[in-house]
Length: 302
Image 1 (cartoon, rainbow, N blue to C red):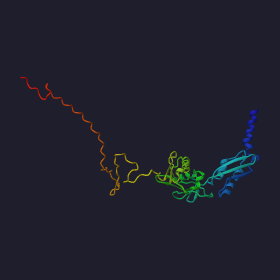
Image 2: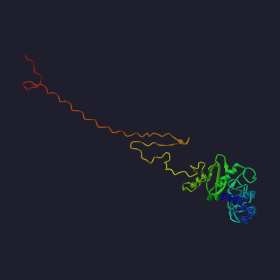
Image 3: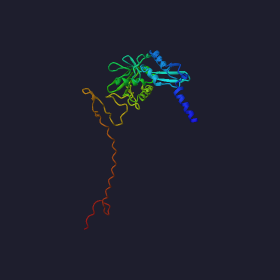
Image 4: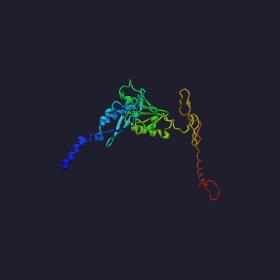
């Protein structure tokens, strides 16, 4: 019995109550619209919502009713039982200007959407037709612009594709940012933001984030080097005693360093040690004497 009762109640809900006028949508609130076609979009949504009930909201029919307005990126629907329906419209945010038309970060052309503030210019090959960009280079540039951090968006001046560098973002009063291709866009913007915030990168003319894990800032002034004595002058370090310094000259004909010239100053003679004193000569042996004490040789015996 209990099971049968459940089946009956489920059938009643499925085929009668959820589509009954007892829960029909009567009050529709639409928010989030800023486009110049706001009234038309609102009217289309309200008309479609009045064919529904709060127990049976058909989102696909609501989206189909505004398919002709590419400015709408998404809708958020909330049913308030028994008769109210709230619809919040999420519009595309303009990321750049292509041939004077605002475009979103996904390449959607936002005809009729008011532009507030300054947007970077993006070049596209040929005329812009339809609701989306067809030129791959312009589409990738729009993706880069759409992912830019909010504090940097007003500073973006131009985004273009350059041979050898890929996508390059020109900034107002700031360095260029070299993106390369349109991969890892979020990581590249994070790397660029960190370099821009680094005081050591102040004055850079470009920031290369093609490898976001190893960003590089270029065009910085050369680091201060220790002063070097001009050619032809004596070195600041005194030469070792007894060694004449080498002179360095520049050949005026070739403007190249000439080989060092050896000094002609004779080196001081090394001190010589005093000769050792000669050993004294041995004393001569005394001459033999005779018995009389007279000198001379003894006469031979007679």
